Length: 286
Image (tube, rainbow, N blue to C red; front, side):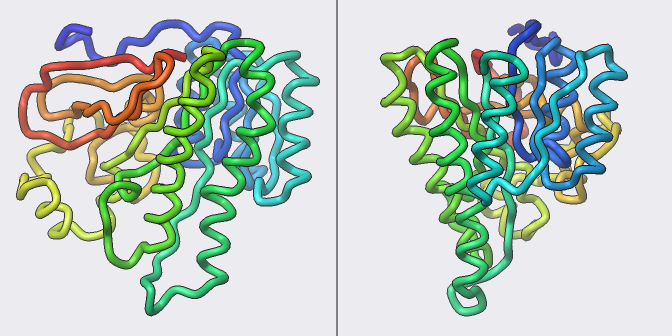
């Protein structure tokens, strides 16, 4: 992808895609983007009203009516129903995007076991269970899994202990199943969203980014709808932010990647905010 081409992606026409956490944030933005690219969507989320609204936005773009499978994925029956309804409706599964997740503030002193259990159940256990049930179907289609992770999985931040642990678990989960499924030609990717943690502590993050002035990394050319307050400083609109789940963009003052792990056509990406011309780009193959 040459510099200056912007956000250009290939078609996902008729790719059956199950997206969790689709009622808000990254999952919602990804759903809309995939709808534009022609994917057949099964959308899971806890907020039925928001999920219905996202589905309408998808159909307004000319996409087929998404299958809505709302519910809390910490409930095992909901996980099973989500997979069963998706397969019953579409007959197959090509892509699984594990986007559902929560962040809870708490240190080793202020957090409690109830908070720990909630974070791990949502961010890890439900992902493990859903992926486990989807794998047989993805093997048949030689499909793809994309796990939404965070820089918190590899970098330590105070005050979000359980969240950091959960994302570290997702990174290891991605590595392991990428190895396990490589011979079956199932691609397993994890995308780390550095910009989504800007809300935590500006000065702490400035230190982490080698004292880069983050204000210079904003993108005034993309003033569109912001996904949440967490992403406001990043200057990315909903469509641009969602596209990171599909590929790693390049261009001045944007993002570049570091390949951490490679399996069967699979890579784990670390996205950094940089104040320089990016030299490389790569694609997440769906």
